[in-house]
Image (tube, rainbow, N blue to C red; front, side, top):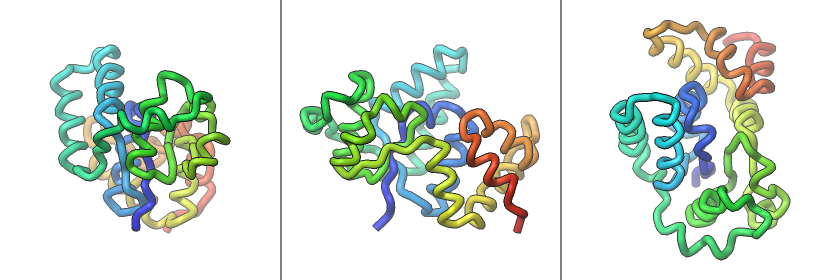
Length: 185
């Protein structure tokens, strides 16, 4: 059975993080999960930042198509089980995690999720940084392969693996340090 990680909107928004996360999911490092509410947050955020809505919709449709099992329907019935200590704006995220029986929520806003209370429910709240370091620890060769593929696929503008790590540095500084400190395979 795959490790299920619910991906919050704030890790699906930056292209560099969603690209790496979904490449790791393609390699079966974990099973991604999200909800329509989470994808709507991603869409709203990207459109507010001036990204063409058609391009945003194309990206989200590609995610839905590539990971049809990631969509978590029927989260409404789990809202009452969400601890009151969770930030009101993130209650739907926790409800989705409960609905899909996720082992983790991956977010950049750990404190909004009352990690101790969710841990009691069997859900670990992990920062994007901690999650990526865990993926590295589990199978660094797979993560290196994903980074190399990102380098090969990135043509406009081209980015080297070092530049990809530079771009990840603000989102996942420990991961960036870990990847740079390890000799390549």
